[in-house]
Length: 142
Image (cartoon, rainbow, N blue to C red; front, top):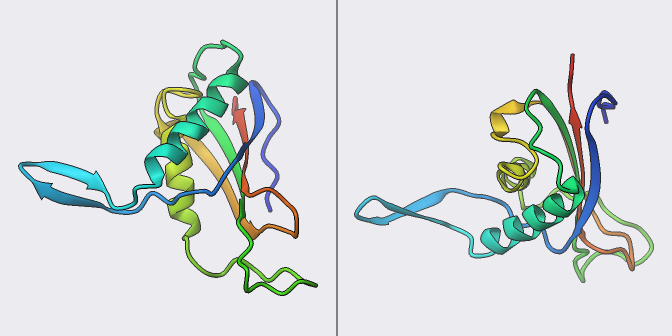
């Protein structure tokens, strides 16, 4: 994993829960689009609330931002007990990242277009580990 620069505003927090991917939207008529996943809305709300708490009342980051997302996915019951395999099944990492970036928009920064560096990683939870996402947001002054 690539280290992100340590400058400016720095937020680090964990959001427990099953990460929901932001997939495609589907058209239901009259120009109305809905998320294909019912889980993504509550997940984004949980991430936004945790981000709001981590901001401690600070203003939105105005400039470039670097974001690091480390997803811990729920361990399937079929996973071996002595080892943890790689998380090569769904959900897709890019869709998990998209949901979190949308949740951070208007909470940590004004728009996700401000993200100039993004590092993402997904893995299965170890036995007894809580699923969720570790988030680090850094103001990038370079």
